[in-house]
Length: 239
Image (cartoon, rainbow, N blue to C red):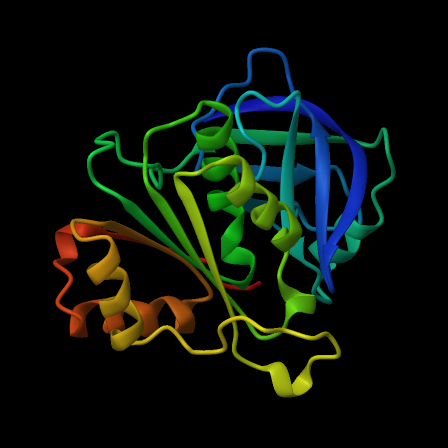
């Protein structure tokens, strides 16, 4: 990995309890959609080992800045992150990671995100749309409530701009929501996956989210008969 000096440009709330940070893009910084960076804060109040945290890159390679997004928890790192002001310096190590979209456009991609697991897929989808990729893309995006669904409005806009992309958002905890929702409310189980396979056979599956969600979806994929060679996953613990 390579260290790059950067700075905060601005912060943005993208869902209830979820913050996006737009960072200055260092000269020469290049990455593939789906990769990540380590963000290193110069926060003297934190122990050195606590100043570093890995984040998937939300922005696409063609964008002029680097964006990350995170759920805001009550941890020392997240408090220091929330306290950053525009212009504050920080370091980025990376990029790293191999959760990138396959090259064979003849095989569809089914992206399955739970909560903040949407972040690497945002980079993929923005890039595919900008490049007019021939990949056929389906995103299954699971949250408890619409209030929790980061980038939902942008994803809906991407479906209008990219006729190779379809979004299925599902909200599994609508009893706690204050917003209306007329879409899916099912959990991602084997019958759900079977419907995907009927629509998009030969799909390669990508699963990102909290550990329990990833484990549940991987079990559903196995029960639906998906060959493990065509499944790629990444867990986001501690979010």
